[in-house]
Length: 105
Ligand SMILES: [Zn+2]
Image (tube, rainbow, N blue to C red; front, side, top):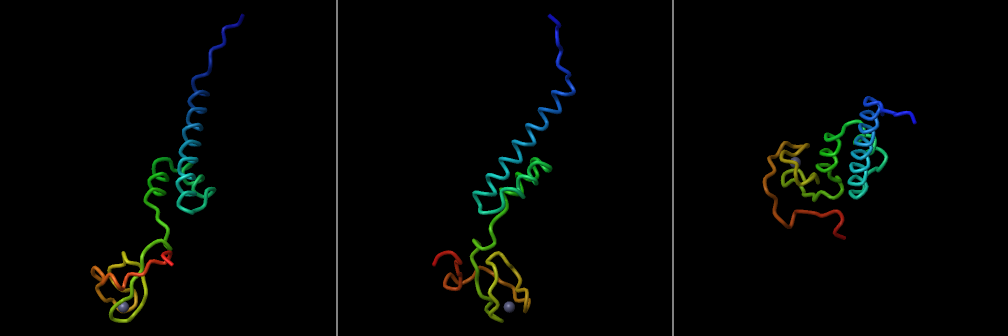
């Protein structure tokens, strides 16, 4: 019976692919849960492990962001915008009545 030694280099390559696939799938599952593209984030997670995973965790859907109206010019923009894109008005914490949730009805 021939004693077959596994090639260590081959094993490392297989392990690397398995790890990258795991990152790709984990990243894609998070992205899908957030309503984004499974396929695109799989590619991102596969080629950018850690970075892709962190990116998708931090990624947030634009349409889920609350919006508010600029008190000076009336432009509706995201709540996290600190300076109005149109008139340059400094936007501090808004009046709660001015906050608009796109998905709340
Ligand atoms: Zn403005």
